[in-house]
Length: 510
Image (cartoon, rainbow, N blue to C red):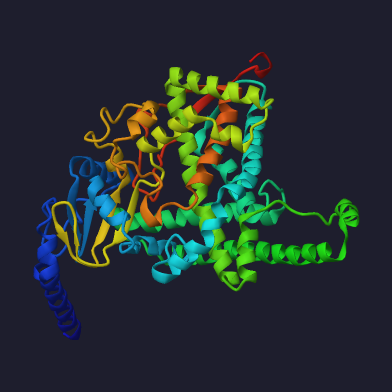
């Protein structure tokens, strides 16, 4: 009897909340926004509650591409979806609506309150500290590492001596992981040391756990399973990852202390001698710049770890996906691939067969191809924010505290701004074609004050890897992009392998 009474009280309480949310002042505003019909209490949950990740993606894409502005109810929580550039500009261009939504809470155990998910004054101060990390002079020093990793990737393919077929995303991802770890922490995951291999393994395991937690609410056949085992697994993995980062930070701080001391004690001649016995300056890493901020009492040890973890995780898969999709598109468009190769070969000849940061900047046609790839296949295909105050968007007034879903994928394929949006055409990004385009119709790296801090770094890395591959190999499709089976995920990735052939070119004859 007691249980029945308790259940009735819970039901009455929920119905009261439901009535207030739906028919209170905020609910009335939200319900003016068009959207698919839902049900009392559960809202639109049945619309997006599916058997598989692919099914959810199909529902999502159908909604995004057929509506520029709509809402759904997830029980008591409304989500407003927008893709019109004017609306995107109101949110992204403002310093008011910079708070990320609860979707990003999944990342909190890993990143804590690092730059990606921090908010308010902490985000503002952290962004100010980190901005100099990505200035051009420092990127020039990072470029050497990125080019070397591109060379290693190319060598690994050439060593087979024949045509190679690769599943792109895992292959490219291995090398973007190496590049990111070396530029962020100053360490190479190519080492066979078990400690480094544990980090790589734990990193991938954690991503899979987060994916499971992200997808579970939308898959009805997953609701019967408990998250307990996943929580335990996540705790175990985080212990490995955080322990690794702490160890690297501690070692780098000791190096800084010893190196600076030696600089004080040794004159210029004896410094050269010292370098021969192993006391030499290491390559610059993002970690070094964070340690300098630590020495000025701007960051703590945990702050440093947060930002290193954020940078590696944010840059690893997004870059791997962008490089993979670019290679696929070039493989399927031989005429465009030939134009890229002609540009790359000319640059390589000018620089005596070696890429530099300047030669990477001169690869303008390749850059247009990358930009067009990111239009069609943006690695981060959505952003989720919360309105900080009542906000007038294009057609509707949205209450404060509303979760917004900003569709990058949707605006990038809007035929009002991109004629024949499914066609791969790098010339969309010629200066004369960019001039009159809405600035918020193309946002692969977000936009406004909270745009991607590492976008210039990402472009350098993508160019370094793509240029060397295209210079050394003809690309031929095995799987086609039209057959990609996409899934709803934190990044735009397929569930099926996607392969191309790398056919060696005799560069001596080029």
